[in-house]
Length: 465
Image (cartoon, rainbow, N blue to C red):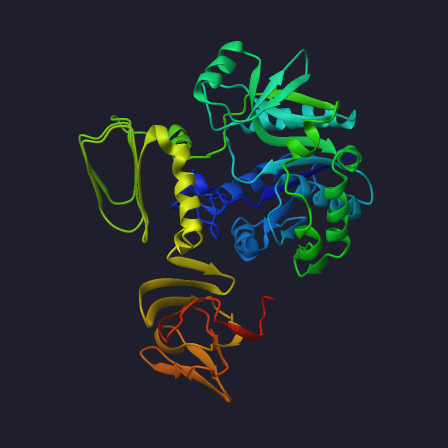
């Protein structure tokens, strides 16, 4: 059976806020090295011998960013499966198994990899995959267990018995319990990486979680191809229980095997985890961007937008972005997700969006926003056009600062050159296009009583929105 990598890229990475946000999560960020975590995972998968091109499972809102990141590294996916809603790992993996068997017309060995992990030892990873595939061909559901080198409360644990036997799966413990696990010597971190045959996986899930398999079969059967993407049916998937593969299947099956591995692994699940894998200066500090330090030790200080100066800090995290600043003790790194939960409850956009937002046609940056007006800098890629659209509550004034714009406004179509401007009245159908070979940049001033991004009525769109 061929090995089919399945890369799960649907997470939000809330503990790495404010860099990681719902619409631009950590797997899409360049946190370690020149590649994003997703790009590094894809490269790692395609470097394995005897494997098929990877199947990516991504959130629908991330589809064009993922496609762009694939193009940046010159690679293609076997398929990109779009989740219309998040339902944890079990439904996603089952849908991937169905799709893989249709794609290959026979069972395959599924190598399930999260898109946001760091693995330093590629040779050890390749060796572990071969061993896991051997066990999987024998009908085992294989989970990769990481030998812990410290007490850690941010990971689930696997209690290992003799050989590859799994005695139990354990939820994230408190510190006292984590220390006991470390001392016992037979508890491994649950990496979230798995290997099993698609046939074994589907048979087990049909037995132990039939409601997931029923709804996800429907989601695949009613799904549709959309260019390079496969869209799962939203209504069917929304009815699926939201469970992890561990809870839905592995904790209930007697076919589970754990493979202890030493891969130089880190899930980059928090700012502390990123600090641990990063290069440090003589004072134990990790800095990025425009940073000045005075008497600072063992800290992570990052500036994205402006100067950050720190004095007298120790074991501290400071993360500055264009619209948010995080300051926290290093030992409270896991609690950053509580800030994100509060932002969601208070319906603040900072949990979801950066000030710069990426779209399939380019990007926009919010420069200023006050009651009644909003100012954006808009970049449109060469040869690309936005949707034909209309707004009920705002007018727009566009000033071209670089490149040439082709504008549709009502029945008129005309060019706007550098240093020229145009006005789009409220309620008028309009479209913006870059007919040139360089990026189009313009300043947009919106005026109106409501300036939300949901005030868009689309009549035609190249991107199927």
